[in-house]
Amino acid sequence: MTKPSSAHPRPSPPTAPPTTPTPAPKRSFRWPLRGIVANVAVFLILGYIFLAAFGSFLVPYGPNDVSAGPRLSSPSADHWLGTDALGRDQFSRIIAAARPALLSATYAVLFALLIGTAIGIAAGFLGRLWDGVLSRIVDLLFAIPEYLLAILVLAVMGSGLINASLAIGIVTIPRFARIARGSTIEIAQRAFVDAARLCGRGRLWIVFRHILPNIASPLVIMTAINLSTAEGAYAALSFLGFGVRPPDADYGSMISSSQQYLLTDPWVVAFPSIAFVVLVLAFNLLGDVLRDRLDPHTRTAAGA
Amino acid sequence: MILYLAKKLTGAAGVLLALSALVFFAGRGLVPGSAASVIAGAKASPETIAAIERDLGLDQPLYQQYLDWLWGTLRGDFGVSPISGQENLDVIAQQAPISFELALIGLVIAVAVGLPVGVIAATHSGKGIDWGIRIPLLVVFAFPGFVSGSAALYVAAQYLTNMYSASYIPFSESAVGNLQTMLLPALAVGIPTAPLVAQMTRSSMIEVLAQPHITTARTNGIAEWRIRYVYALRAALPPVLTLIGFIFGFLVGGLFIVEEIFSLPGLGRGVLDSISNRDFSQLTAQALVIAGTFILGNLLVDIALPFVDRRIIHT
View 1 (tube, each protein chain N blue to C red):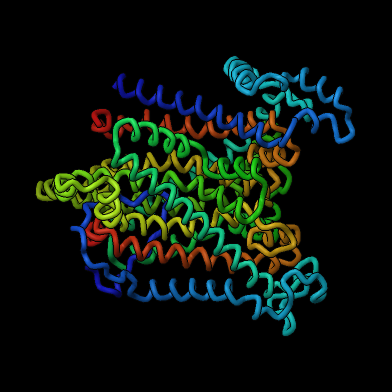
View 2 (cartoon, one colour):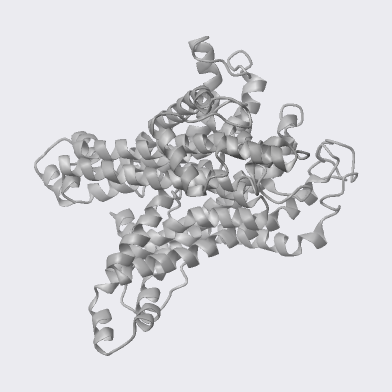
């Protein structure tokens, strides 16, 4: 185990972390978050969660209040982060945008985690025909550029927070399915699974008692990594006009609607951008630390 | 080798076929109810709508429409959009080169930056340089296309006025002018992608450097630079190559945003325009080209892989 001070942050690619030789079942779960980087990330994320939950009590102005101040005013004592083209208070809007940003990522990743893991375990554990059919479907989903698929889904279903989350969830399914399938196949070959089978345990019992606990660690890593990519994807979709409906605030739509004032009043673009980048960075850091701590594969590799 | 290629080719063809169905039905799903009523306008009589439906073959069952469309597409006939009246192939011929150029330059930038950075980080793993590289990478990776694009646009308009031209210049008009319009968007696409390449190179290199054959090479007294940049790098390349195929799709995704910011008339913007115009015919063609390119890119990587690593054929 590396020392707490040697957290290794690294960029989180959307590729799967390598599946790993898994620990024996019933290993006690160690809280994996120690070290400065992890604490900063957790602190920032808790801050955003706090804003998402209680932001509406904290904002100095209504986030959609069109005449809160003069249009496009610079940061001042009245409007800490200035106002946008419609005279709405930027500070209030940035706080209000925390909620759709966090909700969308959470919905999307939960959806992908549930469906993807179910598909992956079914493919890996049932094998044969099931594996063939399910793996083909997953391959097909994987073979389409993600944003194209998400945009097509949204074009059919219509925009909005829930639909955008669902679209992101759908394109994220293959990542979870692949990890779950690979890990399941590995675990299903272990002696303790055979033992359980010989004892007459049912398939479901084996899945919940043996498979799930043993593939949990790569799934947790994938969840953390994908929270940040889902965050980015939602902001991108919202930038393109598929997010929450106006006038509600959203980082992506705030940036896109202010785009035309970029050269004259850069802060209308800069502040929501900063708020969003810090959020994504926090999730990236968390995903990174989790991967270093939970993934024995990178742990030994990094120590080499 | 031939078996391997055949397997990959049939795989790609199968995916493309399934994809065509998906894209086709997504295009049809774009128009709730009847497409003909959109074309005819809100006040059209039922007879006009029925006439338009017959005209476009929309009164046929959906699978029949799909088969007709598929047969046409296979012969290179992408059809005429009933909404805009333009040949879909003409529209794509205008839009696709812009997107491909952007994705390619972006990819070159991502690899040119990411690969060396990843190698340096791997050979100095765990030391100060490694840290100094990884933290900035993580920060850069947190910048999505619309933030990096906005920043690039601001810097260009503010400080590089004579280098950057805001309106798109086709390559046929002026090669230099074209590159001037493309460089910034390509940077906005390529730089945030570089950390992906760097990360994959780093972890792949670290793994290779820890293997016994590297130790053997060292005990044989082979120069350290040769071990690192010839033996290890070569062995570390396959996962990076696979990632590059993947990134091409990632870049095509990034194009939706970057083309929007820089007002480039490419495929990404084309798709968005088709959606807002409810132009299902054009959307289907554009989506097929984007997805087809992605599949083709991955296929090319699959074909290139055995030349880097012979073992891949036997897996």
